[in-house]
Image (cartoon, rainbow, N blue to C red; front, side, top):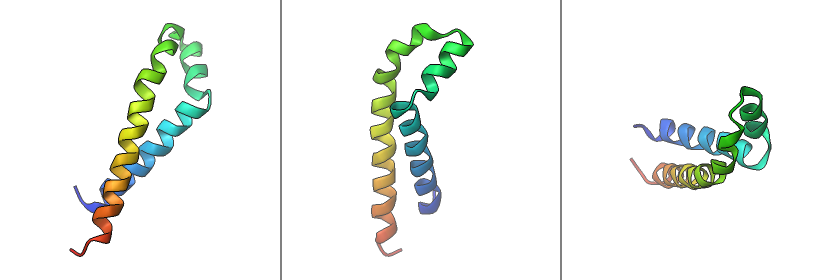
Length: 68
């Protein structure tokens, strides 16, 4: 995976996961669809996913600063 593609994946994933973590977008969507029983498990999934995407973004930025 190229450095630019890795950075795009990291940034888009961080923004998407951050929106679902810190705003009720995913809660409203799941309630509308009828899957409100899953809402209790969101923090267990979203917080590690957010940490992983932040780590991917940091790694991509670190690799981008190194000479090719």
